[in-house]
Each structure stands twice: as C-alpha cells, then as structure tokens.
Image (cartoon, rainbow, N blue to C red; front, top):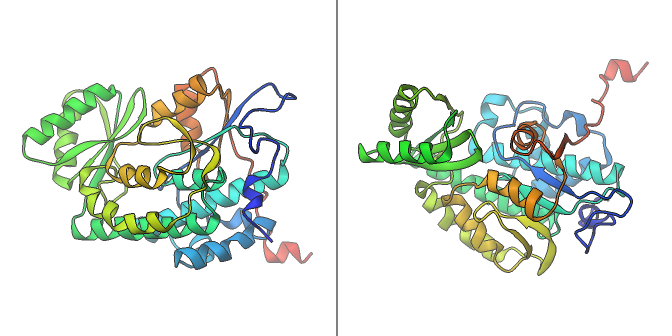
Length: 333
C-alpha cells in the first residue's frame, strides 16, 4: 500500500543535504497546468504507485484514473481538470522515482504554480490526502472565476521582465486589466488579464519586435482578478494540516526556501493573486541552497528546459519514465 512514508523515505530525510557519496545536492521541480494531454497516465498504469490514485480521487472529488487515461486533451484544458490531472501525474512520477531510486537524496523542492502543491506533498509538508483535497478545491475555485469573468494569458519572449512590466503598464493606461503573472526566465515573461488586454498586449509586443504567444487557458492566473478564488480557497487551506517541519520548499511568492508549515496557508492564498517568481526560485535553489542538480518530475519537459537556459552550470534532467504498458494482444503472447 502507498503511504505518506513513500513520499518521505530516503537518506535525505531530516537533513536536507546531499549524501557524502555524491558530493552534490539535488532539487525536485514540479510543473503547473499546461502539460496535460490525453493518456497522460498510461506509462504509470500497472506500477506499484498507481494505487495512490484511489486516495487522490476520493480526496479531490474527481475520477483521476479516467482523467489520466481516457479524457480528451481538449476537455483537459478546463482549469479544474487540468490541475488535478497534472498533480496526479507528477505524484506518480515522484513516487516511482522514490521507489526505484530510494537512495537518491533530494535536498529541496519547488513547483511552478499548481506544482507548488505537488512539491509540498513530496517534501512532507502535506499528506497526499490534504494535497489532493486542496488541488481539487483550488481548481474548482479558479474555474468558477474563469466562468464568471473569462481571462487570458500570453507569453512574451525576447524581452526582459522590466520591459514586459512596462508593456503591461501601457495596456493598463488604455483602460484594460493586465499584469505580469509568471517571471519564467531572462527572456520569457507571462502576462495575464482580460481577453481585450491580451489582444492589446499582442499589438504592442509585435510593434516592439517581441514574440508573443497566447496560452490555451481561460483564466487570468496569478493576478488580482483571481481574488475571489483566493477567498474561496481560504477555508480549505485553514483546514489542511501543514507539517510543522518539513524539507525545504522554495515558494512562488517570495522565491525563498521554507521548511516550516506555519505560513504555507497564507502563501498559497497569496500565490493565486501574485506572480510566480520562477527565475528567482531557480536562483535560490542553485545559488543560495547549492543545488547543482535538478530533476523535472512533470509529464512534460517545460521546467527542465527553463532550468537549462537559466542555469547552464547546473545539471538538469527529466525524471525517468517507466516503459509504456504493452498492448493487450502483445502481452498475451
């Protein structure tokens, strides 16, 4: 049976330091929504970790097996379904890594947006049950805001974060609502706001010669427009049991490492309406915490790519994937 101890085992427990055998320090990275697609869980079906999904489904209120195996990519674009699907796939990736490599030390954890909840579970700050319950409530709260007041997001590439902030300010001066939402790299910053603001931002960005990609989301994540979802999530966060002490997790809102559970509920509320400081987070892991290895535990490779570009001196890898389950006709031969 999969238990919380499966998330906490390994020689790093308690020390937060790399083993003397490797002389290195590893950070675990967990992605947010956007990497979801149909059949995302196929590779983990039949592994010992698969049984954790029963607890995730019960706690979150979603049929997670259905989402991971059968639900179409278009439907998975819905905010609430995307979040629990990516959370579940990332947990499976982490569990299988710990099962197959129990002696590999992991010193620190971080997650991009939704991925912060996966990081908190992996670091022992939240139980699987509380993590799944919070992700379910978070997704529903954000989806409700998106239905009432649809938003949009776009990635601006080739500009500095200061230049993108100035672009957002110019859009706001025209009467539209838009803010910087993700500070992902030196040359990729995401803005979010109303659909009209994102269209206006496209015009200004292209005039300045920057690349501009509208993202497949319907919510203005990490902006003041998400304030109603933050308030809706607050009671669930108050009821969650954050461990008093856990392995270090670098927070989205301040890019600082935290190893005590007392203030995580407040950080999770603030995260919904504040930009994700991912570039700073990577810097904290590498420079302040000495992590010279990073592993992307997502079903995609987005965070690995960002880390390689931001930290060329750090070793970056994607978590090993189990072999796909053989087709029934081949398995029977």
